[in-house]
Image (cartoon, rainbow, N blue to C red; front, side):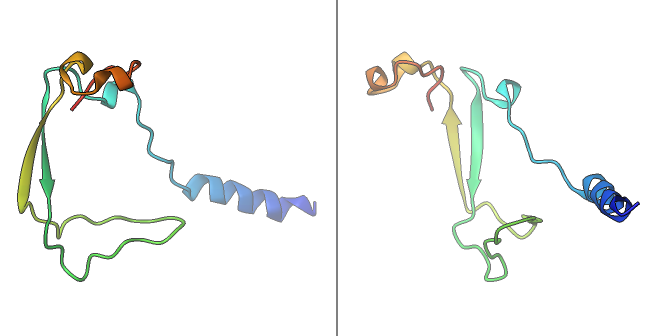
Length: 91
């Protein structure tokens, strides 16, 4: 009976906690794909790095000041590819 409040609190924590993001092979780009990356070179003062623990990120105030295009290539087309023998893609 003494464990009932602990069990209840543990159950509540499990139900309200959020899962961590997971990246797997299907999320990775494929060879030949072109990716557009936007950089905000002048972020506003209200955008601050978060601390440790549970964070809620809001990127709605970011703007694309600099846009780069990245192309995924076979590793053999990249310079110094011999230094990364197990690479499967290069940008």
